[in-house]
Length: 355
Ligand code: UD1
Image (tube, rainbow, N blue to C red; front, side, top):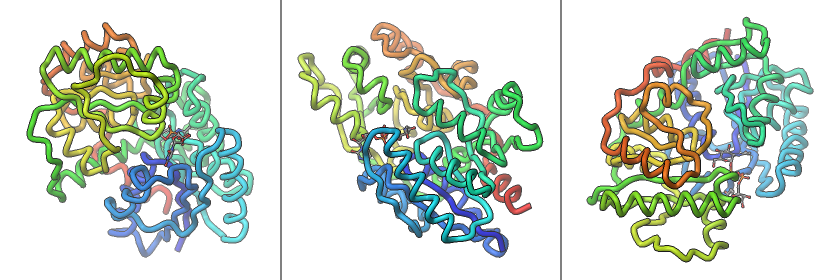
């Protein structure tokens, strides 16, 4: 029996980890034992606790409770805490997801102890080194033993950077596994009788630069008036703080600011939304997998396949471009992109780790 430690800390990681945990629990419990370590990067019930219950994710065996602080300090606190746990407990491997500070800390702590690191969502690149996530994902890839790439573009990025090809596995995207799994077994119950457009932002370059935040909110307001449709806008705590600290002098009457949605509420909202506006990487894909179109509120994306197939448009924080993109994409029915694997990424990953 092999033992692995799964390291998570932020909202998208709970969702990705659920796909792997389900497969282990259902089919591979005789070969692989998984423990979960939560760094505590996200600690609000709305960003953390409820995902464990809703996704039926095993409760973390360890919780470092690091909370919010500067990126360097947050990563350092995690690094020390994870190392202590790995020194006291023999694990055969460490599983990390995506590109957050928790991902980097987990990968680094394990690699320095010569424990194999398995990186799920390896090879993604925005080629924008100002993003903390870009630095995290590049460094994590270099510390990893196995690189599970969600797309062929990600595979190619790794090859271009000279990674040993034996380490690279095209697994497909665990988020596609999840969309299929949860859409089929749960009845999704969000009370929204009226038509709406779904909008979210949380990236620091959108929330912390007032001009960008103002442009985005103005564009969203324009879109609401143009299509006579309410905007459903779940607020990440970072975004709420930024909006609260600004003196909003324009009309946001048509924007319904709400608490962050749960995962199942998000899937439900995607089924009903006329369009999605977001800077979230995960939501871009879930929108596509749900057959809807997306305006991406960033200058670039790691998920280039969505832009190439015309189901998403990069509009950055440009008010006019956001409105024009919405005009092109509103109510468009999308054929879900087939470049994200077959919806069995989690099983490919678990089998490879065991072997
Ligand atoms: C982090 C990830 C990002 C991921 C996102 C999902 C990094 C560098 N970024 O961004 O890749 O897409 O999570 O949400 O790791 N806060 C709370 N309550 C919480 C957590 C955070 O109020 O439970 C506030 C804190 O003031 C914090 C701010 O939100 O300073 C930002 O949190 P942080 O973990 O730094 O990054 P995210 O923006 O959530």
